[in-house]
Image (tube, rainbow over all chains, first blue to last red; front, side, top):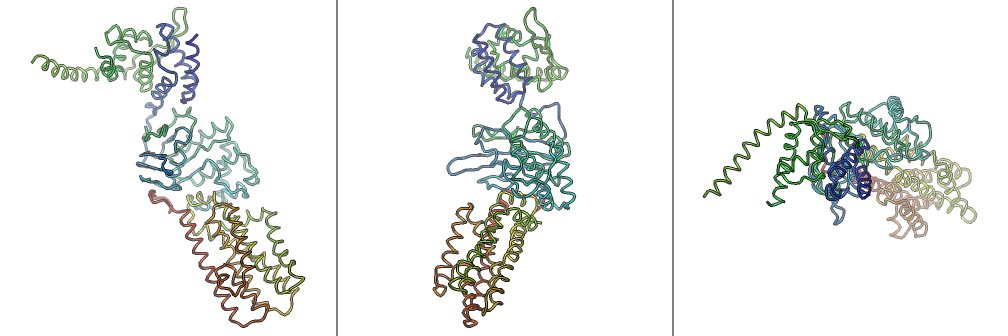
Length: 274
Length: 112
Length: 226
């Protein structure tokens, strides 16, 4: 009976550590078999569920060696980024390099400095130490905000497009096409009348407008339903395959097996990209 | 024997030992743990062994399949891949040289 | 493009627009009974206040969008000049009916001088509102500052030296010239004050925007935009 409790806890912890359901099922079944065969107490054989789940996640979390795509030139290089808010050090010596055709995930608990790090990469937030090199144009999608309440989606497309030198018609067309990829047909509603999820779609479309070389996305899927969430990742893979460098801040880790670089900012550790 | 030290030594070579055992034939986790203990490497906990197996699987050095056990639920079996055989061959040569070096130094010290 | 979008945005805030239009009217009517000249002074200050408030809202509404626009390749000066252009256009549209009203309703005043006050108001008030919004991040604080400045401007004796440091002093000074038919000194002083204020405020806006939207020094862009 104690096995059951431990195994159930392990299932939860594996999910929490971003291990996909299939693999988690295998890991739990294997552990159950081991406990049955050996008759050992689970704590003695495997240790606490969270520790073991972390070890499992660690073993599978790195980039898949099977998918060794030749990396393009460096698009984003952040070196030794340090950021303090008052006396609290949020980021300490964090480095990340992303090449063209790569997706990087920035993960970590709430308050671990994920958004701050992305803001520093975009040059919107100052850093106390370190430097960032950006090669090419940048598209940035904030967690919230970043849209004008009283403008329609098409007007947003035109406005952002103009900054990138895209003519109005082309920008509006391009925006509508990208919106369709997220299962959204932008009408003439003003941004303030859009639902949270739809507004984030608008935000995401704006980030990709004009095909910037580097995409910095800060948990852009808030309010997305399950289907749109998957659409979002497909859009990310498309960007990657088109040779963009994509950085996604996320706390949902079950896509980790499909990204090329993982930067873990947990526990205030000085993260270095895997 | 100092348990900590043995655990440290083992950490560096456990994946190779597992590959070596799998080179003898397919096996599953608990059986591998028993074989390792029988070889005199001490008790290997599941919490140590399975992450190593996952890493080997991840890097393509072993493949896995599930096989029904005698009456019990299915077991996850591991099989060494050709890449694993290659790594094992290369590493055993390196290990022999390394262990030889260590041995030479240590025996010289005790002989004096 | 920035100017156009700002106008579109503002045009959709119907409630605010109506208030903007009505507020100077209220100022005008409030003093029309007792002192005709005073009502002109009040309508000019009312217009300035309305425009400054509009600028304040435009500035704070754009705050969350601006970093993104900057990243998409806009220069900082394009951003604030675009907003100003829209606000100046709005100011002309807002002031014109009041000028016509004064033309019809009032006699024996210097209309040309009143036109100058209004034009200076159109120039200065949006600059003032945008400067306040750039310096004070929250709407409420900005509103209070505007209220305080316009209130002081009405209360303080324009001849006193403290009053000259307020941004709309030119309005009182040229107003005196236009209504009470004083010497041209008043007009010249007012014009100079308005021009200097406009230049100073523009500098404040440019610097404040420049600091807020600056490219942080740790970032180096290779082969991208600005």
